[in-house]
View 1 (cartoon, rainbow, N blue to C red):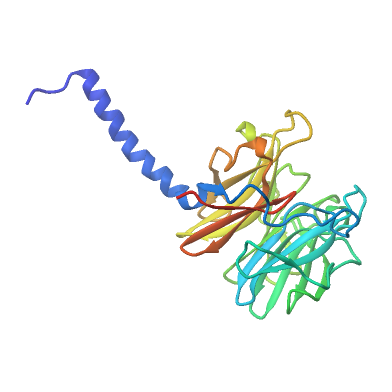
View 2 (cartoon, helix red, strand yellow):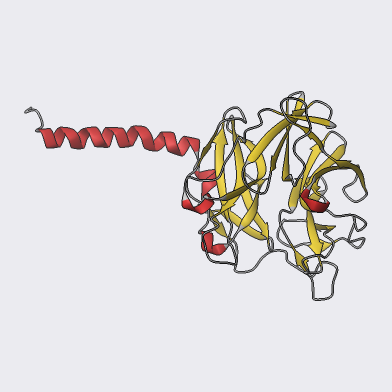
Length: 306
């Protein structure tokens, strides 16, 4: 058989390289985490009627699927810039049709925004933003009555308190015998702090583990929403924006992967077009895969594209 000419050899080499790299990318960012389509044309949960305590909802809500069915904790307020952000609860049998809890708002006497809930044994832990965008910890036995433990005590790697100012969009992850806290500061990056008692937190490094850019869709501001473990790797749901875009600013849902919670590789493109303005995305295990809910400014369900 005659040897291929140079152009033929290059073509064969290109095909071989493509075959070697494409599966690696697909393994790093599998279809199950990157390919979703919206279910229906409307959100599955949204603001109540004008004049209600939750006439508007905002930022990250949290869905937990367990023996109690589906539960959604969300931030509601009157829609004004200064209106107190309060905690609401909705329940569902299928994750599609939701009923507001009759005791709503279940927290009304202090600010609760951008919430995340973690089951830890018989208790539920919540991290959320409080007033002035300071991360706080709350605890509950039933998901309805919550005890507030106060603003998180986060220290620099040296042990000194972090500089005063907002630190929000907290994400909690339990890694064996330690807790990991991811938080943002003015959306300029995501930092990692760890703790063994949920009381005193210390930065892994005083440099962020995830930063904006270099792509245009998350070029200037980011915040993390969730960590999941999938096939031995950690995946971070985060959202980002480009401040040079026209106002009102639009945020997009993004994905990053890590083997150690410290070094992260971004997908490099948003999960949905930035013009759709879908953010605060949360993966919820369902069947053999995941549902993906974006939360701001209403809860929109996305199902696997297959």
